[in-house]
Amino acid sequence: MVSIEEVRVAVEKAKEMLSDSGINVEVTADQVWDWLETDLPTPDLEIGDVVLDPLVIVHGIIEIDELLKVGLSITKNLRLEHPENVEDAHLKAAKVELMVARAVGATEHLEERIKDIEQWSIDKTLTDRRRAEYEQLLAEAKRHLERLTFRCG
Image (cartoon, rainbow, N blue to C red; front, side):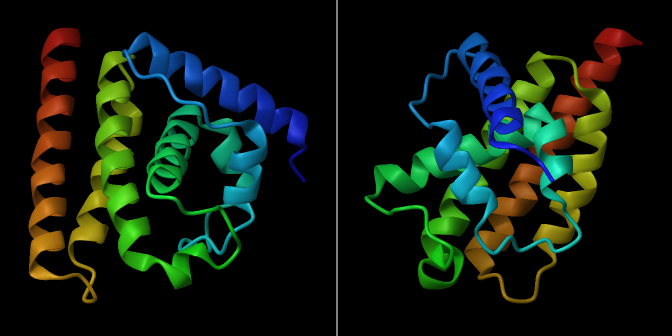
């Protein structure tokens, strides 16, 4: 089981990455802990895996920040009670996560996220607008990866 102290360390590292990219947020480790306690839509994702990947914490921090901006609290049922707000926050978080991943040269992370975004974009419950947004995000992720591999290769 992951401790709150491990979450604090992960949040500080992620906030430093965000700050290096010009993004400052006031999200706390306690809020991230609460977020990790909500009903995650990916049952195969373990909290320990999330905490070990600072870019996934970046994603979570941005999601939380976006939800707080619209006046929501981080509760266990947030995803069920406010799915549209959570989807909006998720999309924004994914965009920021990709930008930070590119900035730190996280090629493998981008490769894995491209697979995730491909899955997100074929979700049958998506509206046409949201599907188009995810398809645009997928194209953006591929461009980020292409720029990184071109620069590194």
